[in-house]
Image (cartoon, rainbow, N blue to C red; front, side, top):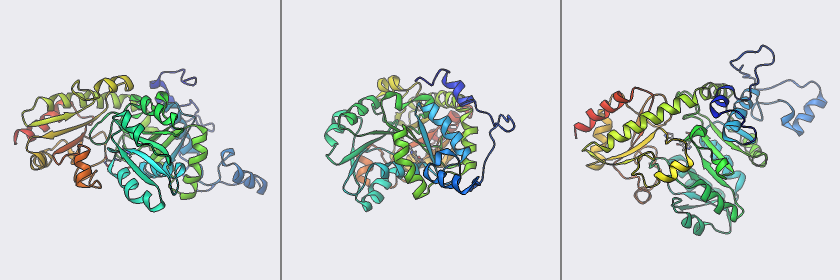
Length: 393
Ligand code: LCS
């Protein structure tokens, strides 16, 4: 990447090096304004023709949000980024920008339950058809693309089963059919995986997770080329799912420690995964960093490390799993992920309860599957907590 002369860690801390021109403040200022004064009627009219020449209304553009977007574009190696009120708003905007009535989108069959619901329940109302395939197999992707398919959407590693999808392979197939590859990069973050460098066209984030990193905001991002910006910005400003400037500021603050947090999330998750693998009450562990993970070699190729998410199946299925989740003390029983706190939850009845029973089983989201977002506590404490709970089975 031409603009990436500095290491990722330095970019994470400094962004584009632009300090507040008024004061030199190292912490960025927040511009909470909803509206900005025009210098003249002429100036106002010009901004309405090209909103990128200045600021006039925060739903359209805002300096604090732009500063955060510039940082994220730098980290992902994209030309621009757009910020949304949530990850779901970001995903919706991209889908609506790419497809309309009579079109289809090809999607990984294993994705966040909210995205699954958007595609199965909401998009069909406006005539956009979802095509679900197991995207771990490139041939299946090829076969799944129809004449009216306007994009391929994958999540890797996938929520909640941690399946890993070949980004470069999927991008090649997408481009051979003249359509974009969209990657939800929420789980790895740009510190561990940069899909645009691997050939993807659009990156999506739930900034609610590792980017903010402290469980204190909801936000979403789209990163891509100038062309992507031109397609998606009208949806952002006309549908109106914009981010609040305060949340953008919190994301800037969170981003500054992304590398340090991700290193520890990865280290703790590997220790937790290894512990779980060795416990008599655990049937299976899903973590891309374990040599036994079906796509471990691919994960090593396309990721710099394996992330903080672990899924596992307890012997005795749903009832046994429920007992584990009701017995933990350091792990908190809650959805969301990427927080400093370790969060544990049951995908089949919580994050992925939007799936039908058949779809859950077909995609390996079994009744006994438990997902952990491994936090930044001392690894031994998380492990002791899980051991106490598992020993009760
Ligand atoms: N993409 C992924 C991979 C996600 O995990 C989520 C939310 C979203 C997009 C949507 O982002 P949001 O609108 O919530 O900012 N995942 C959640 C989860 O696994 N538990 O709670 C939310």
